[in-house]
Image 1 (cartoon, rainbow, N blue to C red):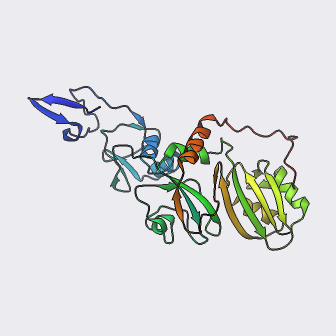
Image 2 (cartoon, helix red, strand yellow):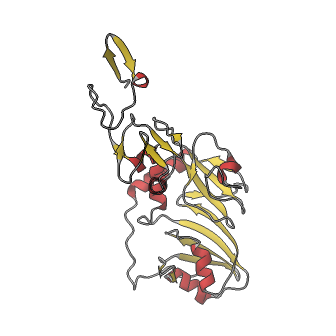
Image 3 (cartoon, one colour):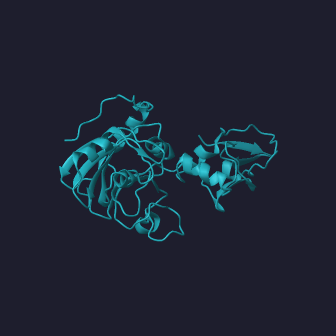
Amino acid sequence: MLFRTVVLGKILSRNDMPRSQPNDHRPYHEPFVKTRLNKHLADRGLCSRRKADALIADGMVLVNGKVAELGMTVDESDDVRVRGNEVMTAKPKPVYYAFHKPVGIITSVDPKARDSILTFLKLPGRAFPIGRLDVASSGLLLLTNDGRLSERITHPRYHHEKEYVVSVLRPIDDVALEKMASGMMILGSMTKPARVTRVDEKTFRIVLTEGRNRQIRRMCEALGHAVNTLRRIRVMNVELGDLPVGACRELTKEETKILLASIETTPLAKSPHPNASINPVV
């Protein structure tokens, strides 16, 4: 609904009104709802909430000319800027893309980064990658301007599935695959149980419900194996399929419907019991 007020007989729209300043006690009723700054940035397609918190902590966000603080709240009347650029007031129309990332492309939207997704795709509107694939990996990467979806898919509290096809340089035995399936120590803690399926003597599929930094490569290295190729073929209900390398497509209405419904119904992940059963290597 259009917000209007009358000042000395003149009808003013929201755009005609002066922006609020700190400690500015306006004589008219404040119609805007305060939200946390990280959510405000995520809702406008800038990044996920966690990335927004990192930008705020690094002093890259200004609110009404002052350096923002973690946990502060803003509304649509506030002047919010990131790296000097004003953040749009209205929420953009949500967009959802599937991208077949080639090897050599960096999962970054930093305008200064070379060979990044931002420079490679040049998507209309503002979209950012959900999670990441390291530069040496390829496969399915979802992109969106929906900060809440990104948060739900990438946050470690939720156990959303991501599936990969991995090949190593020399034959890998069942013992090594069983260790990856049952959980193993990397980066100072145990990985969650995974589903592992053998494809051939050097290739296997693995389904993870977490996304640590270079997790599969670190697991293979800990077992004495070097990864040759690593390709992500599925994120939750969205599959890579026959999407060509370097190509990008919008998600179908059905894919989007299932994806959005799943983040509403997925329970919080629980730490697996030490004696929990695992999926056997096939």
